[in-house]
Image (cartoon, rainbow, N blue to C red; front, side, top):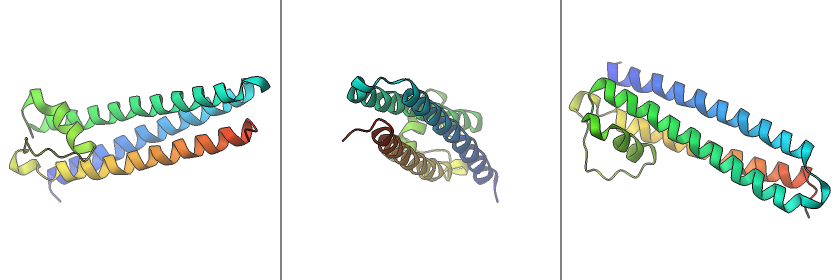
Length: 141
């Protein structure tokens, strides 16, 4: 295995750990909200919980992109003023193709994309679980 692959794998593990922390934060937030919501404000509570969960997950995704950007900066895979943009384009699988990493680091683009797909899917599952649990705990019909 080469350095690019090992570096990408390490950053993937770091971003997965960040996503796990985000998931725990969302779970704790939902549990707290479920204990402290009055019976007459169920719909408002649901909106607040979902908005807060979505916002929290978005912030964590921005942090995960930053971790990938740091790898691009450290390796010199792309120009320093493009690292966050390049990481974001790859992480979201948008793939404009306007930037191409330096040859030894090309594998990082697809690795970033695969990691982003995994983490966005995970966030989708978390949001669905939050919605399901909130509906159940708040007894919304």
